[in-house]
Amino acid sequence: MALDPAPTTFERLRILAAIESAGTIAGAARSLGYTPSAVSQHLAALERESGAALAERSNRGVELTDAGRRLAARATDLLDEVRNAFDELTTSRALPLLRVAAFPTAISAMLLPLREQLAAALRLTIVHAEPGDALRLVLDREVDAALTDGLIDVGASQTEGLHRSLVRVEPIVLVGASSRRARSLADCAAAPWVLGGASSRTGQATRRLCREAGFEPDVIAETEDHHVTFEVVRSTGAVSVLPDLALANLPPDIRAFRRLDLGLDRRIELVTRRPLAPNPAIRSLTTALESA
Image (cartoon, rainbow, N blue to C red; front, side):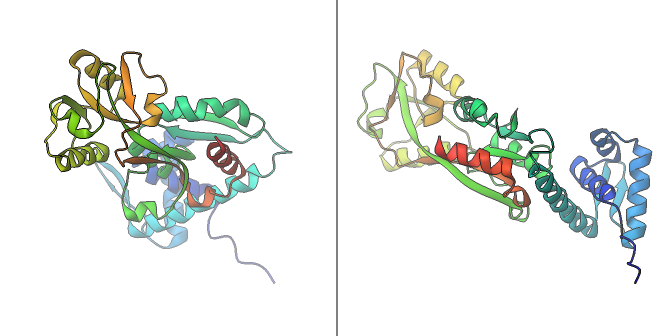
């Protein structure tokens, strides 16, 4: 008995996933090495094969229809499954390449020390991105995984397709000038503060703790960059809070009050697309991070 012909080609599904990620025909073409005309032709063929309108074109670009988004999601899963199959054949091809996005302190304190350890299992490419941007890179298939601080959400409908592995829990620590003494938050009531702004969960949680201690913090600078925080503390005598990773190279004139437990922690998670979770390279990286 003759089999029915395949409904489409794998390459057309890859093109559809690229269109969703790029948002434009031209952007998808650049990412895949095609001409825009070729991408449009493949999209038109895929619409004929599926019998559904998959995209709506406008002056702003291309927006997938509900049917297009559903098919693109399945296409993304298939691409990851094929990636897994090839990465398991380590004896027949070069080591798998793993692109991982991470924020600066995670790069310096977690990923860079593991490069040599992982060299026999994979080729690691590190992409600098803050947690929210890193998650979007994972969803857009621009990276394979991301180290995030576990506080960033990009919408429940999108995170359903993500797999998260907890690799580290680190305390949030009070910091100040080396000459300062502080046994409690109340001892810092008269000090100027450096905290994250309205979008910073750590900054908002610290403000709440200060209010519970009986004072409103005098915030003279808002930042989540620990280098900027160190400069403000050094020049003004301010106090702040920072995650433990940011204290790896603490300046000599700034101290961390580690004995003062603020009750605040940060979860460091390795996030990948769900179909990639069993990938051997992802597993190797996860195991190395958890062990470290």
